[in-house]
Amino acid sequence: MSKAKAQQPQVIHKVIMVGSGGVGKSALTLQFMYDEFVEDYEPTKADSYRKKVVLDGEEVQIDILDTAGQEEYAAIRDNYFRSGEGFLCLFSITEQESFQATVDFREQILRVKNDDTIPFLLVGNKADLEDKRYVSVDEAQERAKQWNVPYVETSAKTRANVDKCFYDLLRMVKQSKSGMRVGTINRRISVPRPRQLDRKSKEVTPVDSSSKGCCQLL
Image: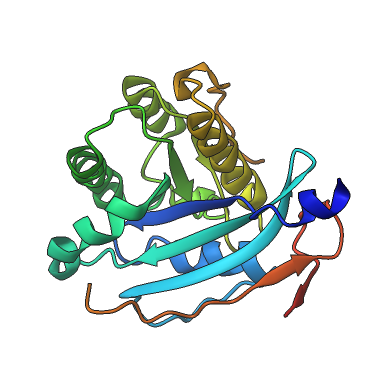
């Protein structure tokens, strides 16, 4: 019985990172993957990562595709979005323009997926720069409410809510795959106080189920 169970294919959840250039998509991804903050990172065209995590007692794999936010790559994003099962849409709380751009990203995702219930989480990054904030919590919360999606504020630098945003999205993807309406999940606000993919496929195995980034590279 246990042997048969061991032979079952591991569940894979495919997550796409979207948002304008410079909002911290790569920094947030690398913080989640390796528990380290990378400040200087070359603009991404499309990097792929893989990590094993324990989600509500079940070991699953998360595939993360970190996509380019620059406008010149808009035409090729459709190809990336088609494969996505859940989306983290980032903006910087210090940059109003990046917040406005989330509208275009969501519209493109909905056009490609043709499904307004696709797992989607709005993320306000750089929460450690509160003194430079241009996008208020109320403003972001109102947009999330209009879209009927959760809103989370994160800091790739301090690691605030980094695990939370990924695990919340994974639960949404899991619900979607099980046939439950994603709209039934908890929508609480959380604020802290192709050109071929240039693949960087990295597998990570958690040392324990705490998901705090204590990982062993395979």
